[in-house]
Image (cartoon, rainbow, N blue to C red; front, top):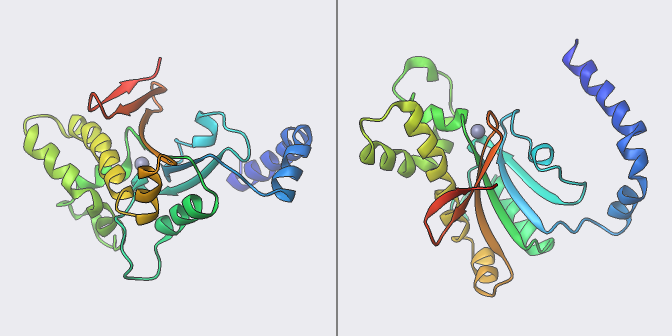
Length: 212
Ligand SMILES: [Zn+2]
């Protein structure tokens, strides 16, 4: 099937089905505005759609998707901070109460860190500097488990990168203030879509714990 036909057909099924069933909800969300309680940073990966895997309803999630679900540190230089702009809007204007970093297994962005010295990257101008945001996670994995396979290292690196993004969230003054005031909580989640397992970072245990 033509991939675009699949999408327009899907739209028609949505329009005549789910939308019709929730027409009132959609009208309220437009008339009264969105009031999501949760902002979520997810990967652009086509296999990890937060709204699908969490069965979220319209209005539930304010989602930012980028390569490898990364949050850059707060910086005022430059003009095109898409992820930072979305976070600022979610926190300052929508007043979300939670920010979730949703990492995932088999992330192409994280894998690219392990392919840095290959010649396949010719023409990649934007991914390498973007992924350098979590170079520290990569170096930590290489230093602490040098004998592990790249596959194992990548899984650990994916989770370490979530923690780097959590740390970067706290460099935003608007986030730091609200976290200190108890108005905002930050969370690190990690999903493996092959096994459909979800893990949540426990800051007390300092480990990712499986959701039953
Ligand atoms: Zn990814």
